[in-house]
Image (cartoon, one colour):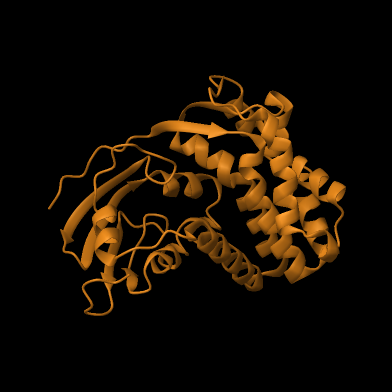
Length: 278
């Protein structure tokens, strides 16, 4: 049994306004397809009209430096590429200007552009603060949708998150053995997905691993700020990503810190006996 390492809660975090474009464009497209244009715009406006940005502004107000490899000149053109990717001109009910206005009134894009224009900035951030920048606006949208249409809203958000995980996993495939090795390796360079995790490897082989997460900054963040959607936003699509890496992979998990347990009990295993999955 491996020793539980002390969580590293800080990591180098780099942001610019375009960092959030793809996620919000995917949500805007998905919701407009499922709910229609008018309901989506109403939901979006109602969610962010009275948005309290005190914590967001406190995170952005100090300690940031312009990134050495700042790509300022490319950001505006990249924004247009993203918009066209998610909203091709021929099939969109929203104009290019409408989409830009919606996104640039959405946190934290609005706050980042207000403070830093089109600069790319970076600093050593806590996982908690980085999670707030990355997920607070999306979690607010998810909560508003569920409050509005109930259980159907959860299914819509799950479909959207599943699509997002699959898109992020595209091209990242390999053998079961490689995934198990990666999943049980000690983190040497923390990032948004690993900072603030205390992990204990209970057992492992080439085809199976049992891992307990003893501390989780993701759980702390969502429990404190978005408990209604914490499991949905942060945990529900884990197996989707594992299967995208290799179709033989499966997840068995009976408890999570997010849901109030003292640990998350991950069992990752392969469902067949083939030793060299591709």
